[in-house]
Image 1 (cartoon, rainbow, N blue to C red):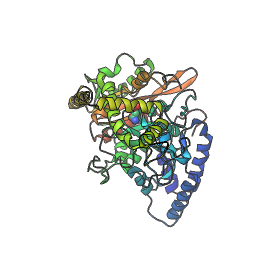
Image 2 (spheres, rainbow, N blue to C red):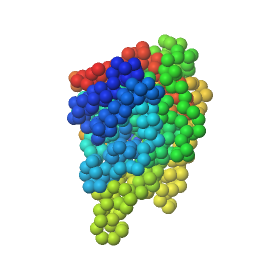
Image 3 (tube, rainbow, N blue to C red):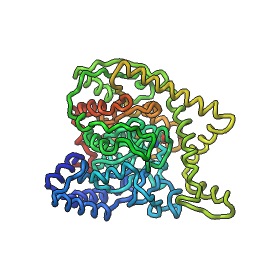
Image 4 (cartoon, rainbow, N blue to C red):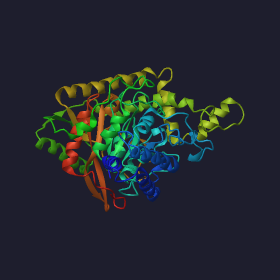
Length: 493
Ligand code: GLN
């Protein structure tokens, strides 16, 4: 069942919220070996379901996501469950999730889901502090890809993507700084939307790189993503970077017919390093738009090659500053041993994982006196060039179609020893993040590899705040390709 099925079954009284929640909890249990969820809110979810059933019976007005079970990436603050960003530093004992930090408030997006009568089922696993592309950087163990248990689900929102792919929940929230919604969505065969920067509140999202971070949905179909985004988007007085503009009508955008589109195909996204299976799947989507009246235009985004280095300077610089608050004093792990300096050193030394430490060091170096101009300032200048590439392209076309990721899901362990290879998993998603524009990944097709069917994602990109355009184009392909109902073997229906 997808998001609308849950909603309709509950609204029409075919299934109670309690029954829906129980089914979902049973599925979470069956899917436990995937390690997609760090926490299942059994009691809180059932209590909420009882309230919702009473409300429906009393004829109360039901919210836009009434009866829809949703998982929340553990980077988002939740009042009724620990919040750790999958880091030991946000646990009291330096080990277990259950001793995780308890935020005194809900993130704005979480509060909006609750207000819309969604059922919050649990917290999703992720790469520590959202740094990673495979979920192998979680302090609580990697997540397995439900299509092939020997492969990663992608990252950093890998738990959210795997939970949706395994049909534990029809929808989840993730966060995307450089691809962390779109890349795992593509590797797990689900839909993922990175909204335009400023579209969704970041209040209560544990910050990784504040000028890039955005919260967005991962869902089993395009309509579900539209429904969730409509609820979470829009101005928030608690986040000054969240733009004061109402959310669009994304659900309606999914239903309208395809307008006459100019579709851009950026040359640089089809160059060396792209797996043939991905190229073919994405070309099929481009052919689809062509055969439905779109004009296909080859465009150039000349600064694409600088995306990875620019991102890894800016994101690490911002992370080194954002993560300085985790020092053993106020949050989570506190290793007391001697003076204040050794409290900092021991707490941070034990609390952070290797990748997080690497990034703090890279970022601190890039910002340090004498290197700032050569690295951070230069990266900001190149970021402007990358944004201008997109500005120019969008004077020629309405939409860009690209691969979401250069390969299908890779194997667990395949890239852990080679951070550069891991960073390259995001070459097609990073530039849009640097530009601040919106992007959506959805299934383009499948490839058979070593006996497993692996999903391949296509990425659609549109200008700032043109999310409606993404939804219209994505829903059109989804209707034709009819891939949305496909679930991994053993996780069906
Ligand atoms: N994989 C990228 C990184 O490791 C992007 C992560 C993200 O979007 N949070 O930084």
